[in-house]
Each structure stands twice: as C-alpha cells, then as structure tokens.
Amino acid sequence: MNILLIAPIVYPLLLGILTLGVWHYRRIQMIINLVGSFGLMVIGFLLLGQVMKNGIQVSQIGNWTAPFGISIVADTFSAIMVTITGVMAFAISIYSVSSVSPRFMNREQELRRSQFAYYPLLNLMYMGINGAFITGDLFNMYVWFEVMLISSFVLLALGGDKNQIEGTFKYVTINLLSSAFFLIGVGLLYGITGTLNMADLAVKIHQVENQGLVTVIAMFFLISFGIKAAVFPLYFWLPASYHTPPISVSAIFAGMLTKVGVYSLIRVFTLIFITDVGYTHTIILWISILTMVTGVLGAASQYDSRRILSFHIISQIGYMTLGLALYTPLALAGAVFYIMHHIIVKSNLFLISGIMNRVGGSFDIRRLGSLANTYPFLAVLFLIPALSLAGIPPLSGFWSKFFVVKAGLDISENFAVFVALAVGLLTLYSMTKIWNEAFWKNRSDNAFPPMETGLFSRGNLYMTIPVIMLAIITLLIGFWPDPFYRLADQASLELMNPSMYIEAVLGGKP
Amino acid sequence: MDALLAILIGGLFAASVYMILRRSIIKLIIGLLLLGNACNLLIFTIGKTIRGKAPLIEEGAKKVTETVADPIPQALILTAIVIGFGLSAFTIVLIQQVYQSVGVDDSDKLQSTDN
Image (tube, rainbow over all chains, first blue to last red):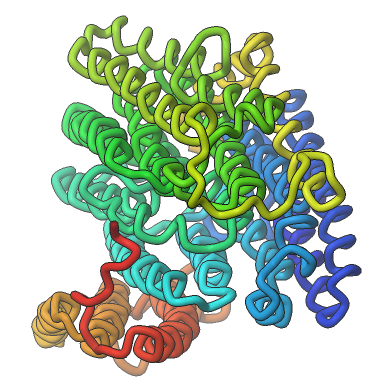
C-alpha cells in the first residue's frame, strides 16, 4: 500500500475532523487550515514527483486484486489535478484569513457563518475532489462526487441570505439530476460488462456485442459530466449560483468544481468510451463550439464582475472539451495545459474581484471607478490574469490556446479553430469592459464609500498575498512553459494509450 | 417478474420527469425522490431477480453451481440509498429555507439570481 496515494484523500479528512473538533475556536481552526492546506499542497507535489519518476502509481484498497476491489490510481493527469487542488487550497486558506474574518464582515452574517463549519466543509470538499481525481473505480467515483457535492451544497448555502438560498436551490436540483444520470450510466455499464474497475472496463467494453448500447451509455455519462462541467445546453445553473456565496467559496468553486466534471469527461472518453470515436467525439466537438460562443456572449451583457467571470468559466470549459473532442496527442496535451492555466487564472480573477469589492465597495463594475489611480498595484495584479485569460502572449493563456488551436489546424478542423480564436477576442472585450469600468473611468459621486484602504493594510494583506502568489504562477507558466508542457505531454501520452493505464492497474494481465 | 419491474421502473421515471417539470418546489422534490428510486430499481434488475438463493460458493467448488442473483448491484444500491437519504434530508431542509425567504411555492418566482 502506497501511503502517498491514500494521503490526498485521508489527509483532508483528518483536517476536517480536526477543525470540527475545535468548533468554537475560529482562530485555531484558521491556523490548522492554513498549515494543513500547505501540507496538502506538499502531498500533491510529492505525488506528482513520484508519478513522474516511477510512472503510473496504483494501490489496491484492502489488497483485493484489481478487478474485484477498489483501485486507487494516479497517472500524470490525476497527479497534476491533485497538485493544483493543493495549490488552490493553500491560496484559499490564506485568503480566508482576511475575507472570512469577523473584523470585516457584516456582524450578523459573520456570526451565522462562524457558527457553521466553513473550514471543516472546505476540507471535506477537498477530500471529495481528490477522491474523484485518483479513484480507479467508476462507482467509487460516484461516491466521491457525492462527498464533494454535499459539502459544496452546504458551503454554497452557508450564511443563508436570500440570493444564496435561491442559488443553492438551483445548484442542488440540477446536481441531483446529474447524479441520477451518472448512477444510471454506472448501473447499465455494469449490466453489460460485469465490472466497475475502469481499467477492466476499458478491456471488456470492446468485447460487448451490442456496441450501440455502449454509445447510449456514453451519452448518459456525457449528460451527467456535462452538467457538472457546465457545457452548452446544460450550464444555466452556473451563472445563477456561483456569484452568490462569499468570494473565497466562489473562487474555489470556479477553479475546481467544474474542472472535476471536465476531468471525468476526459477520463471516461479517453479510457472507456473510445469504441465509436467518430460519433461521440463529434458530438463533443459541436458542444464545445457552442459552449465557447454562448458563454462568452453571455458575459458581454453582464455588469456584476462575478457574473462576468462565471460566464467566462463556461466559455473556457469549451476550450478544454475542444481539446478532448479533437482527440489527438497535441490536443489532449493542450486540454490538460488549459486546465492547469485556467484553474489558476480564473480563481485569481475571482479573488481579485473580492479585493475590488473590499476597496471599492461593490461587485457591480458600473459603481466602481478610478481604481487604477488609487490602487495602481491592484491594476497590475488584475491585468496579469485578465490578459492571460484572453490569451495575450506571452502569458499562460496564450500557450494553452496555442496548443489547442495548433492541434485543430493539424487535423484541419478549421471552423472550430476560427471559433476558438474569435472567442479569444470576445474574452478580451469582456476583460476590457471590467478594466474600463472599474479601473479607468472616474468614480461617480453616488458610489458606495470604500470600506478599507490600502492593499497591504492589516485587513487586506492576506487577501493580496494569494493573488500575488497565483499571479506569479501565471507568469511562470507564461514565460517558462516548457516544464508545464512536458507534464501535459506526458499526461496526454498516457491518456492516448489506455493500455498503459490498464497494464498498471491489472498488472499486465489480459 | 422482470417485465413487471420494467413497467414499474418506466412508470417511476415518467412520473418523476412529470413532477420535476412542475413549477411547485414541493413537487419538484417529490420528482427527484422518485427519480432516485427509479435509478435504484433499475440497477436492482440489472443484477437479475432470483429469489431465495444466496450467492455462496459450495465448499470445494470453484464457482457457484446454480443460478443466483448478482450481489454487487445490491451493494451498489445500498450505497446509493444511503447517499440519497442524506441528500434528500438536506434538500428538504433547503426547500423549507427557500419557502421562508421567498414566500411562494413556485419555481417561476425564483429569478433574482438569474439576471
């Protein structure tokens, strides 16, 4: 049994229990979470290092041999995702010191929130996310999804103001529906193959006589994961709920939760459902194109900074699934690269919108203004992720878009490439809109008075640190893309050759 | 038996979709509960429905000699029922909160976060 493989699941559980134990002591909870999430990041990097060094890591729970027990599998893609979860957890835990602290919140709201378990839930959610990333068993994945969902439901509703409750209601309903689809898919798949182990499924799926049925089941998975990843006709829950909770919760949701859906899509559609690529992946291609376009157009009409960013999550999801749909080694490497870049940049933008609210007094960019004058450093911090999101070279967004677009040109999917590039321009339009309204325009007199001044004042310091940290990572990916690309390339190599995964799990058996 | 279950499951799915599409929030929740039950029954039938035989391997034998129901789907359902129970409990408390804050039992009135 490899301890490092179990750690990404057990460790956040321990943190959750510890923080629950000190329920009434917010300060201790906060410190445990701060130190603990740093440990989570370290575990992620150790796991990534081990996977890079020794190849795909497998652990059989309870020593039941592969197709019978539950396997925990970390290939490069999983390890990358676990690492990013750790990085995000660390960034959010620093940010929470300021943003969820009693001194700066509406007193009543804060009291309610502190009674309930913000930190324990956060850690339990990391457990669910990590579990979904490294499990090698389809039903087990369903269970991790539920762990993640129930924590996210409560996190979204914590505080309980009207908008939050309403957003949570929509989020809960659509996710219950998606879970039902997932369960049906898992059940039917077991019915025709007699196994739930993903590696074993990848072998047995080719022996099924009625391949039409396999495609039907693939559609169940596409709908279920599509809802969670927020792709084209299934995304309306996202802009209706992601802007309602406190900004630290929004940021981690925006970064991680939809990406769990994308991860699962990529996992099942490169490992299991590759029997009729011409059909399934063409559907994904069109879904991706429509997702990119509708997401970015939705953002154009919005003025709440969080809602603009929510719509941009959707349009960016389109790029990732486009990488999956093109289904070439370069395209998948592009998709993995895109996920790495996107989680960092998008969460950072949400965190920055939280700072804009703190110093400017509103999330509505029409009410903000003159921020570039008063907070020039904040303007720089905003420009890095914003331009990166739009794909301006040499920032990280440029490389991720470049790989996907290059992959598209290689197999002459010219229309998809055209749309991807046009959407990049429209993204720039939205980012310019935030820039113009919040940073450049003169502040009107009837705007809210600023609450707290100074980015590095005692109250705001802990909000600024994670933003700087994430901006540095963005710059690193941008100016030094080589190691990140090699990681993505290795991940895509493993994804394109399912036999590597199968051999690692089943131990070379046929 | 299988035909009967198939009809039952179909009926449950139809009823749940109908209920989910209603505007009333209470009925929507009932629809989701029915949907969960329909899924569980669907998985139950996948493992074959054979009465009164335990899936135990006789001493000395390598595999089961008579036809028995597959126990794995039943284990899956058990897990799914427990998860579903927790989620339903949460959802029911949530709709009570929704009703308290909005004051109507009508999902059409829940539009303040949409625009």
